[in-house]
Image 1 (cartoon, rainbow, N blue to C red):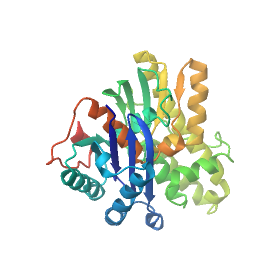
Image 2 (image 1 turned 30 degrees about the horizontal axis):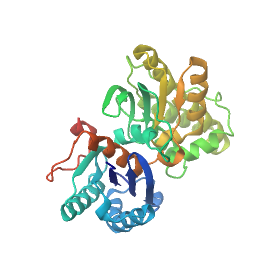
Image 3 (image 1 turned 90 degrees about the vertical axis):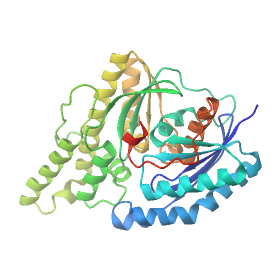
Image 4 (image 1 turned 60 degrees about the horizontal axis):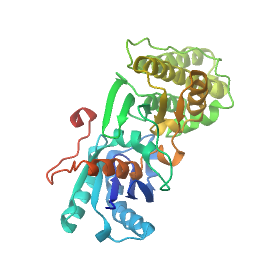
Length: 340
């Protein structure tokens, strides 16, 4: 029996809706919010208001793109968290109303698991799926995790950041240099013109498979402070080298633990996911390390690296297979810990 899932994503500043039938994507629409750029970060109240304005047109557009009506939907999947509470409330409330009005079951999705399962989105029926078990490095603006995926229903968190995430390190350092938000893509672009060995920044030594990026951020800030005392134009004069060295340091920190996790768990199918997985330097470095280590490396298409409803719909599809439906009184959860 064919199963069609409507996915809704509203965890931060992108409103997205997608349609997936039997694991194959039929539509994935995203409405982004540019209003936050002038503030150097996402403003939660503005984000939630924009979601309210965008969610109906986006869902309607996804249905029309897929060429189906609401009566052909078998379940509604939505992001329960983590994310901004105001933004999550819009998506969860809309999903509840839509499901209740049309007699549809609901599927609550962990946003981070959605990022991991973006590798399982198929655009054609004969498209291959990743080999399992899979070790996934999830790198986004707010989270950095190492996850062993034994099946779409079985994921083990084996390492995570104990403070800042890799994406936060990019954005915060970019802001100090006066670069526009979001800082990660700008640093990636400028890094391609610089010398990654121009500056040495701290690489925190954290036991096990956990990460830390606060020490790197502090080291970066101290470097700027010391140099600016003698040269007020230091940042402008060294912008590309600063970006290249910062990016190289973050990538090195990420890949050291990724390699260690691969060895510890004996997993050679390796993937990256999340917003930072769009970083060209990280993609190249993972591919090169994979070739050296004999890994099967899976890089997500760039369209699935940012927040999108296709990943929520595919996660919902696998939940539907096990009848893991959500109750009508389910509430959004801003923090990851509340979803465990």
